[in-house]
Image (cartoon, rainbow, N blue to C red; front, side):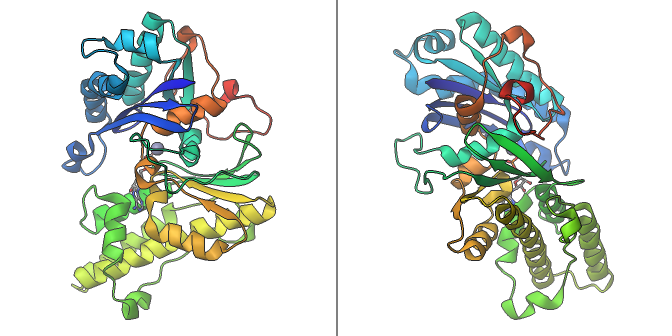
Length: 367
Ligand code: KG4
Ligand code: ZN
């Protein structure tokens, strides 16, 4: 089954064509990241305008490899070569979501193809099921997933734990009660002067920390106690980081060395929390594998820490870096494995779409 997927939940506009939820035929991502740099964060209005500008060129580009002639229109290519259209309906920014959703509805209406609404957060984990890239090269990270599996989705807006009995049977176990881990990385990056560079900027700065000095700053690891077993909280950590930055400024000690030490400690703290909670869930549910996904799962320290802590206890899966951050490949994969076609009249953007999936609920109820 060949699915064209469209993703526009935040500041990326993406389209992809994926066969049977696993084989990538094309993937295109346009980002308005740089536009937000000068405002110090994502401006929803700017993001939505950029989505409008990008959506048709991005879809056209994603369909290019399928065209039977250079003149073939988008609608004709879909009619001839695509079996279904998938689209992110939430959670996300309303203005951004509307662009993808309304475009997908129009394409479904004009071509008569089924339309599959997709939950962005649940979809992230399906990046672990992708076997090849768009050049037909095997995905070097791919290993068939053994179930049950614990899945950590960790991104700019979410930090959620799920247990999967199969690619279709998902149960939510816990998540952040305030900020997401990615947001903590992003705020720290801004505080330390790395602008909109986010977690990658922190990862790069941390790599420069002098080993002997890494213990000089110590941050709290919130909610590691058993009472809050599978929930996360990162807002207190954000405050603690701000306090450290202010203290360094007051002492006139903000320099490359202290910034690297603080970046390293932030990364160690966030990764300690993510590893500990995820493995607590893995032990509790007696699973066979652990799946990482979402933008923060691109973090090399997080991957290393999971690998060394897990050892042979479970099989660890994480996607290649371009599939961790927002794209439309995993939207198509989710649609294949778990999506349910819906009448296009009934498909709407839902900015606060639920990410808690109760055991036994059907995909239609929580797309
Ligand atoms: O999944 P994603 O692209 O968008 C959301 O759905 O939120 O995730 C973006 C998040 C940002 O917070 C970004 O700072 C973080 O992923 N991120 C990283 C790294 N690369 C991206 N965090 C830590 N280390 C990285 N290497
Ligand atoms: Zn995302």
